[in-house]
Image 1 (cartoon, rainbow, N blue to C red):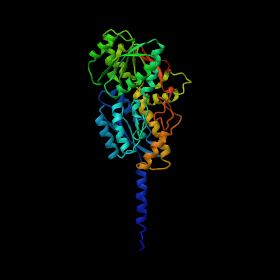
Image 2 (image 1 turned 135 degrees about the horizontal axis):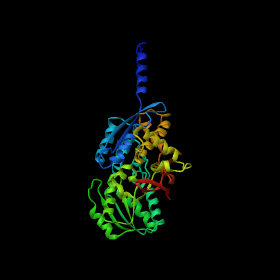
Image 3 (image 1 turned 30 degrees about the vertical axis):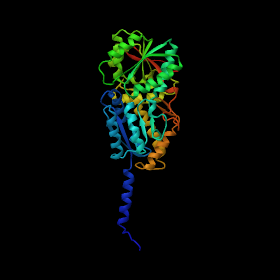
Image 4 (image 1 turned 180 degrees about the vertical axis):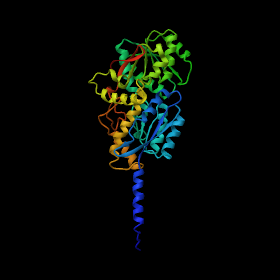
Length: 387
């Protein structure tokens, strides 16, 4: 049997096909902690997505942005919604470690690549069948723990007290810090925890004071990390205080105030981009983000955490440019190609370093992604490249 299509039908079919292709766009599911204890981290991330490309290689990009309120259960709910209802090609988020860890199963089950904006090495390591789909932009806690313990050792510190979040961020930091401390012959004399929403850490600090350590490492993030430091100062602690790169924003300086003075921390070069020497390989790419963010939100508004979102956008742009050559957005093939392209990114300058991904490395940052900083006069001061 021969089927004849009327001349009027053929153009209509072609128009439908062309319209379907025109409507195809890269759909990006973004999950941030814009409210709750991690808001000082999530807000600049949310702001940054307004600065990211709306078109990649001629293909439109749409961002679906949800707030998980710093809650892991909500982060999972958001991820499932964006995959099932918004049909996203990639997930970006969350802001914090517990939420990012909770999202991994969702990404893997749906074979959707994910770029986390949280720090813990556990998000991408070990790379198994689930983490095969997961990448991240912030420096690992293991990476920064190496810098902190090197600085402690070089400055004659022998004993250290540890106080960290009572969640995956704090546990991850203690695991990595204790390994490096052991290698450098640093004795951890106290190991305490506190909640992100706690209003008092007096009991924990009294134990630290009783041990009289040479230094204290506070493994927290954002403004909640100021609480142990302020309490230590109130109790008269005179030793050195270290924080992690989780506090590298101006909100922390504001909340901690004079009690921050003299604090040491490793940070991404973005934090002190203007202070970097001209020959630093990250200065140009870091300043590109600083200029873009401050043009939109005002002088001095830039945050290292927004940089993690910016870097996720740079990774997406690089990977999508490659994947679009072989597949259309909205397809399983495109998601798989996007994942592979992310894994093969090399020598990509971003705001926090130079990215070289690989099968065994879904972060791709090296020593160029960290500097040592001290809080002096209520400001961040570059004191050198972290070892």
